[in-house]
Image (cartoon, rainbow, N blue to C red; front, side):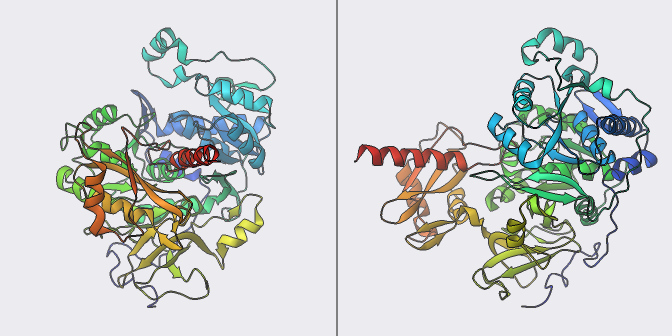
Length: 565
């Protein structure tokens, strides 16, 4: 293998071998507030917050949390929707010397308790929303949590929306219980905003414990240091073209608790002192209305978001004319989707790749040329991608041959929280074994064949769902598709496809679609069954989710076996 084959064709505006100097992660806010104090940091439903005021609230949050005992080694959870309070809590925790633990609002009670106990979270910051508070209060009663810091959602809204919300949306607000756990958010911030300085070791101190999304069991907490996340922000900023500090606008519709949005939307935006127009969730018509009004220059999404934008009745007039940097992550971007988006919306989507364990971005397609179809791009600056033999990890695979994708770089996590053995399994000589299967071409572009955990073993043959999905996506009537392995008494597993159509009224038959893909796939790769649905399950960030379908099929199989006894 040629060492670092990507260097010869690396973007001219980027030095691959550059060195990055990390700062404490909260320095992002301090630097933006110093250089652009009057620029708008956040716009939430019309209520705006300048960088000067943002820093002031972060400082008061830090001081208030220190009063609750937060310092080095103390873990503070965030259980919030997208709103300015999320960022204030995040950076306030870090400035107090604590560690952030992000919690998904989609988790149910037992999942939250498991994560609280595993991560040793002592304090949780939340809101009085009925979708959040009752659940997290029960978690507090049944777990190690000592304090619930509770903000009123109406405080995030501008006048008169704040009053109207309380009057007309009372059913969305929970009754707050004034008990031993309760700490009022507003009162917590009533201080002089002068937190005690904390000496941060950027390379060793953990800024964030970010739990990976496991399909079974309890997910593992990736320990991301201040340097891991801060340098990943610097890598992304170096990779981009023509970003101007204080002049960029981004739509924040990916959930901040997810590692992709945390770094690419929240942290990178602050580094460039951008205006973040926050959307609590991705609601298609609302996002397009916002984009037409705000004219964003940056956009980050997952493939399902781009599918929705592409198929909107207003496309191509959806407010993306000023986009400089459009990044897709969180899931593989279907080749057909990327091409169709460029043809219709006239925006090139740059597909990136990363994991929670890499803070998260490791590779990206360059912005100075056409994206390489089907590729996750080149390594970011100071990052190496290495393809190893899965059976013999000491062997590096020749260019063009499949193996396990490994990442080495400053964004690779410190390790898994309280899981030394699991850490040793995935980090070898500073190199992260991703478990994903792929290859590198002779210009250094990497291609994922499939995610290792999704691999389907059909009679001993490897079937990669992404290969099957790409073949089905080629049919012009297909809107979304996901492929899973289902139990088979003879073969062990066999692939099954779940499909939604662009036009629900279209009469596409299973036999017709199976015939369409017959010549595109090997015999062992072809699904024996295709199920058409009105919609497919998705995660909080809008990524197609397989685990619900896997659970359904396993239950059906178990029931059939029981009836057949």
